Amino acid sequence: MTTSFPPGFRWGVATSAFQIEGATTADGRGPSIWDTFAGVPGAVAGGDTGEPAADHYHRWRDDLALLRELGVDSYRFSVSWPRVQPDGRRFERRGLGFYRRLAEALREQGIEPFLTLYHWDLPQALEDSGGWRSRDTAHRFAEYASLVHEELGDVVDHWTTLNEPYPCAVAGYGEGRHAPGAREGHGALAAAHHLLLGHGLAVQAMRGQATPQHQFGIVLNQSPVVPVSDSAADAAAAARQDTLLRRQFTDPLFGGRYAPGLAAMFSGVSDFSFRLDGDLETIGAPLDYLGVNYYYRLHVADAPHREPDPAQRTVADIGVDTSRLPDVPRTGMGWPVEPEGLTEALVGLHNRYPGLPPMYVTENGCVYADRSDFADYERITFLNEHIEAARAAAAAGVDLRGYFCWSLLDNFEWAHGYKHRFGLVHVDYATQARTPRASFRWYRDFVAAQRG
Ligand code: IFM
Image (cartoon, rainbow, N blue to C red):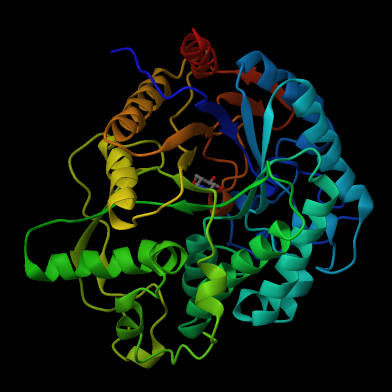
């Protein structure tokens, strides 16, 4: 079937700073929480760190040539906060200069820069004074956003505040699987709130100095949550998971309220006193777009809490079992391949929140074991089916404006290190040679065909 999307629909690819740049001490860059976390024995598979990644900081011109060859009209990347403010406060112009050169060069090639301000690399100095548990970090983030926006507002129109606050808060401060590696009951809920507050304050600050063509948005990971049976217990478990993963963020952003079930789920852990008067209004100020990252659906069964004492539970211990996967193909990450989940995620948001801004699919992609010739036919099938699922959502009435494949290059996949490869382009980390996979050529031809 020929896939048709609305006129002006954007086709892009996405990356993030820490995952591709390397050069972690170049030009005055300070340490981020991921540099610190990667130094903790056992935290990241294989002891991998942010070096060398894809050495994009030095090889960005080669990567720009790849973008050009790919023919995408948009490129989503993130700015490394500790390059621009090494200690979370002091401005390092050399770090900012990298992103100016990149954004200018993208524009010269007719590629629209979609800039993300925070893709998980908090300056370590801010973590040392509380990190996202602390309200002050939200204010520091707004200052940083305002600085970058002031400096790059002439070359960037699309401004995303946060990428996926859920894993930052829950995997980072609740489960300890991500930086900063905390396993706290209360900290993760406070972090989630302060991430949202930082987003709201940043949008406020940037809008105050914006020109009319500037667009502001946020990116959320959206896994539809499906109970494994029609039992009431599994349905309740699915509702808890949905509240923690999605409604904790979408209700304040787009529903004008805090997610109703959240306080009840954590009544033994938190008094939510970090929520102050006026915060909801700041967080819920209108946005120009919502970015949706989709990889898989979550299949959920009711399960006993691991920690019987509610006051001792981490935020991840909500009495659900997510290990009972359906009998469908899986990617190399073990994630179920369910393209219809993308349609469901987009249509579900559209139905749940009247007045939702236009959406983009800001990440979608997969990992499969490489063949020696890099003929990644599974990835081509995966992308094709997911793009079709996005089209189905648009056909169902969702105002969908673009699709970004994750990712342009193989990169540092957080706690998995360099083992899992999401790139349309293979990176040999020893030589830094780039080899486009078959999926790169497929996406290039697909994008060209959309333009007619
Ligand atoms: O690599 C990550 C990215 O940083 C955030 N979204 C999910 C991707 C794949 O796990």
